[in-house]
View 1 (tube, rainbow over the protein chains, first blue to last red):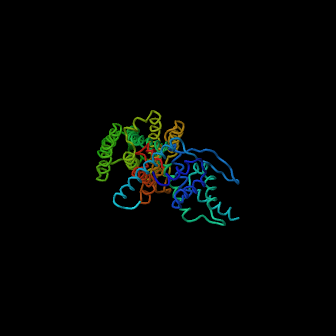
View 2: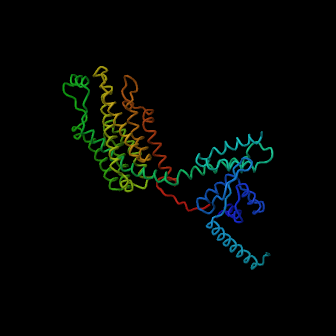
View 3: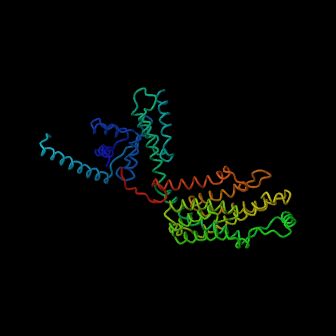
Length: 105
Length: 338
């Protein structure tokens, strides 16, 4: 799974969000490293919807502009949990090896 | 207002996306783009613009190669790879079975000139060796595609083209033009489609009726071609007598097109068929009042006009298959999540 996809799913893990909310959340989660652009975001949202990992939660009109809120599906939550566990296991292994080699953690 | 100028520019960028995508997403994406804009910003940033254009092209490519259109494209080409060689044989057999019946003034002029009733086409063609070689080659290709032998059929097409270049092979002008287009397009369809075995399963009597009408239209066109030839014009002192043949050819072609629509035949089967028949239609147009048909004395320019659509379509078909979004993969994997 690409990092942007992982971060988008993570942004939706705590609750539904609209497009701009996802962009700002991903910026915060990644510590200011990943700034999603609109084209990239909607490409990813499209693919995630096609794969049934996310779905539309509701729509609102704010200041005359359409806001569509997305949320994780149960399948999306499961995929995110599995990916997070995989990354955590990899990170743990890497840190373990580094400490064995005498590196600092 | 700067906001409206920016909005207009963003809309122009969003126009890169396909209409169906825009209907659902444009307003939502616009809201996100405007929410992310700096205060007083008048133009979309360069990186933002590049990202939108790149993703829009990505969406268009994805729509092109996935889902039902891709499958129909593959099915249509597979059917064409079987139908085209069969149509060619049918047209050649008609050339033998239906001798030209010349318009009365032209016939009497030719009898006066030759001292006998002119015989063009018909059974005597079977006594001409290069014509028989051509017919045998075409029949072999048709048998191979009907039998579902993709690679043997391709080899036979290559062999036939070689025989043609070597001069072992001869057909009346009109069929010569058709056979070149057929070999190009059928060859491309054989390479790029799921193959003639798949196409054979999909062909029905409806396709048969449309193909038979096409062959009849081609034969009527052959009669017109002869009636409008420079020789005929000279002999009949301008009484070319082509009008009834032109009317018959157009009526038959019109009937084929109407039935194809009524039967809802696969458009991707009809496209190469139409391109194949295009050479016929065009070559029948008189170049000028005195010089007969387009194919009568062909220049490189004429040949380009006659064959360019077939060459371009054949190249496009092969390119699409090579790029992997084309017909040889009718059901692309959609399992990638993101």
